Image 1 (cartoon, one colour):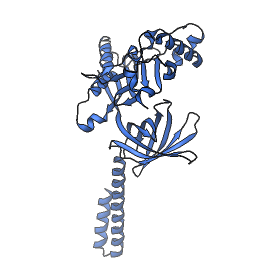
Image 2 (image 1 turned 45 degrees about the horizontal axis):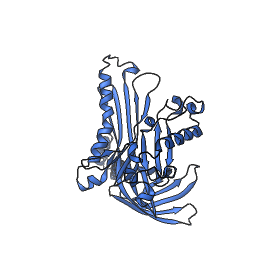
Image 3 (image 1 turned 90 degrees about the horizontal axis):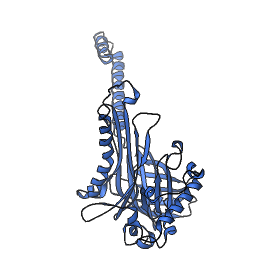
Length: 367
């Protein structure tokens, strides 16, 4: 309407012979057009912003094998990385500008211990650049391969079950156009709890949408703990709320290796030599570590030992074995989950190096 009024005003003033004022009207019209062009350009730039996307890389930092997971959201980059042989995660924070990632590396004390910098095409299958120590005295080249995109899927089932699934989508097979048996495994495991909670909701046919307990919630999250071409270890959690004071958490990690007819899940017994005494060694180490962590029911004596059956949730890496314990196993709900890391050095002479662990134990894998 303002443009139309402006045009009518210009016509009227021309009819009156006021050519100077007509010139001013033309300038105002051009200014308006320019403003519209700028607004459209800004809108297009905003629509073209990159991310968010979460990517998992693995490869080498100098002579060291590392894993990295970063999230790029427009110009912001956050994430973690860890040395395979150590397993302790360091925070990453930085920017993604002019197709270049520049990130600070931050330890548990909040100190900057290094900086990662390199040009990045997130759609390509690799990332190269330079790591520099915080004091600038040491530099290492890094060469990382894109392993997976961590994909988030959200949906509402039956109109009253909110579902979120986070899982890795492996890139190597996608880049070659092949069907990946490992991806089939990942997807089936990730979406199985979705069907389970829908079935549970159908078994409770009461329809009271105005009541909070009528709506269920499910979050399934899987992330890569360790990747190599010969072994994939994934840490996972399932959180569900179906009514009550709070929801429930369970740990659901798994480790798979290639088999003749598809992925094979590694069992704890596959890791060790029969008759080596590994059961007692693990039980003693785990209960001692939980006591040091202050797990309430271990400290009070309510839990005095850890049965082998309680050690079936684990991940493998060159750093060792990580075991997972759900809330209420070693302490009250408020203490949450516990994890215990057992380094391979504690298990010398007990590990079956001809089995799946032989691909990650440093001495056996040649790392």
